[in-house]
Image 1: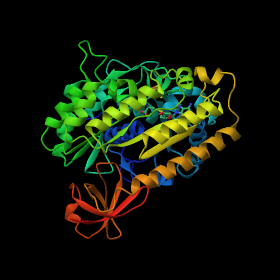
Image 2: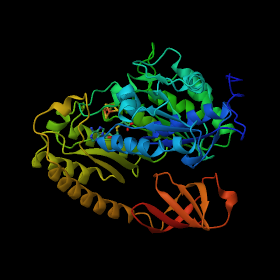
Image 3: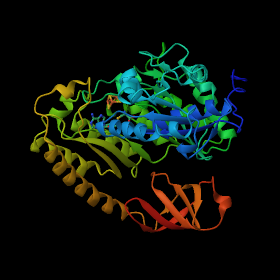
Length: 453
Ligand code: SAH
Ligand code: F3S
């Protein structure tokens, strides 16, 4: 661990410690990166603020997976740059996937207001980059490839919103080449975090009061494949489950073909693994799956689901799906509806296809008009609503096990083994941070209302 950080003294202004405002866009990986960044900034003597107008440093951790987040980030930079009118010494920093994809072009688009820029590869270079910024220079370090010392960023502890559960990044990057996806460009090739480093972080988290760990990676099911002697992901799960105090384990995201028999067996055998799995399928049409370079068929996907349900009959599945991929016909879309009907997802994240610069699919002919995407999306959401209503009927009367993580307005709130939000009217705040049996009285599509057993 880095004990002292150079320059932290100078960072104190006459008015006290410098304040940083961090805005995070996009996926859970970004959320975890921001938690890591906060850990570094805290060591540097920064305090956190929720009010960007009072910040000495505004940092945007960005996303570029679809066009919408791109636009949101640019709009936010446009707003936040006004901070320099309030506080001429305030600095603006941008990191994450849009920074990685656009580099200095992003600064030009933003009118040259960006002082600091780095990628997800070099978060741990932040102390040196900030020193440069404080000398009045622009510090832009967008690396084409992850540096050798990449894993050093894990020597900084994270600062989390919630004391009872924690994200743990176990791998970075993605080796799949889905033709619509910009992530392999922005996050690089797959790199698995060494097992010792993962287990050590989890042990530290447990000591800190964490009960549930949520393992993260663009493609967690591929963990361990890139080691000199490959290790199956299922082995890591058994090792984590052996750590005293780990009461619940979640992981995202899985790739269908990497959901191997040994992994399904581990899911069946390890009681701490939550009864929920996020397994994106993207399309139900085999023709579209081939065009997407997704290496499975609809039938194989449904077979995996069936195998999972053999070991976990009540598992709550969730998935991502793309509507209106180039060339998607009505018949292809009906295959997607059919898969959704058969797989019965507890939650479905559906996205309209959005062409991404530098990805093959953006150049494909037969781009689907937006009206068609909207109309299909609408039908998909209607179907999913019906399924969620059907599924929620199985909850009333049942006992579920939320980990209570929040108390608000006389209610204890937590997520259960199925990843459902559970709310209980109770003032027993000593139950925060505990997994507690709750009898469900009423179920909506997203929330279960119940009472303590
Ligand atoms: N394996 C990753 C996927 C990252 S992208 C993970 O960790 O979740 C998240 C989701 O965004 C994808 O599963 C896909 O459904 C969607 N997506 C990615 N690129 C897209 C694009 N160009 N247009 C629309 N949706 C896209
Ligand atoms: Fe993107 Fe496909 Fe990887 S969706 S993150 S290229 S598995």
